[in-house]
Image (cartoon, rainbow, N blue to C red):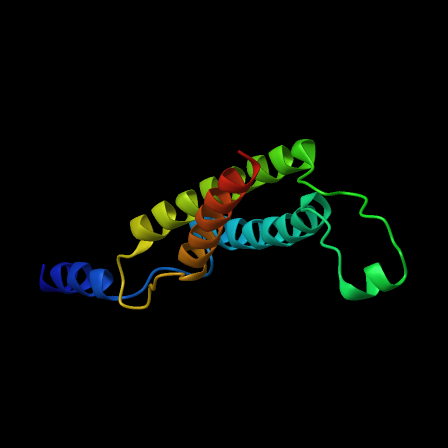
Length: 129
């Protein structure tokens, strides 16, 4: 009887995780997907923003092609930013559900991702309205 009790008590103390489970893999892929969205956001931001005339442009008599925001691309940009904010929120939620052991930690990149996406949504919304 004592051996049975000792085995039960010791089984709670041992770490039974053998490797990354579905939650860890999901958080990893959400992080990768979120930062890929950041790269896409930077590219779309560069495409949709107004072109600023520089001194060299005026010196070479270049014409401004895009004096204001490209609305269609800016709306796609906003959609991708909302998607990134959703990915960040899901990642933070999964991470808080996962914090049960001493070795578990907050994945801070989800907070940075959400913060950057929120600021981007705010900036783009104020610029195109």
